[in-house]
Amino acid sequence: MPGGNGAKSGSRSVPAFCETRAVEGYTSRRLVTSVALAALLAVASVAPAATQDRAYVASQCDNAAFKPKMIVLACGDAGLAATKLQWKSWGTSSAAGAGTGRVELCEPSCAEGKVARAPMRIVLSKPRLCPQDGKRHFTRARYTWADTVPTGPKSGTIPLPCSLLED
Image (cartoon, rainbow, N blue to C red; front, side):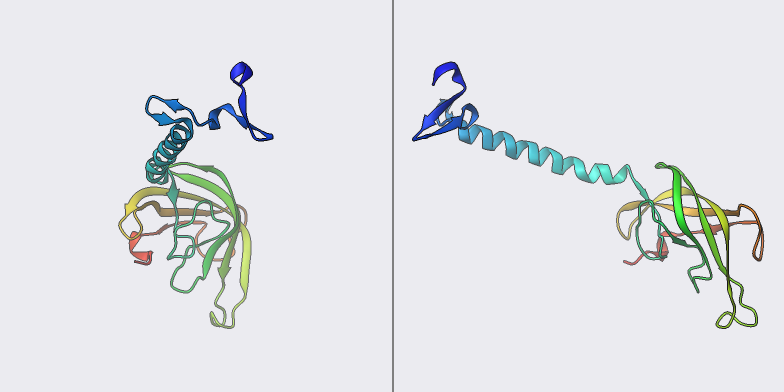
């Protein structure tokens, strides 16, 4: 084993860290395996904490989504939604984005009415740990029509309570 770079095993070279020699009561393969297993367990124990550093939103009213492309704001009939969302910021206390607002006009009825679309900004806030999935969710959405208002108010605040999530 010249230079400690490895040993010959038959006709192939074996890396030094794979050699089977005693190291304080362990063979080096056992030592490498033990170190790898310890590293894997350390990463696994940190993973649940990492999900607590992330906030989600109920984008389809009953799910947990991170930076979704669409959020349904009127969960009863999906008559108001923000689509094609691009997020300018997404933190643990708030998120801000812009996209296309989609609203059902319901004239003469919602089944027969047209759908109007216009640029919309959205801000998510009020994060809360939801017991249904153990994740932090934004529980409030504030929307603002950026230019023209297809119908209704120029802006509004929609609650997104944890109770919307599936158990």
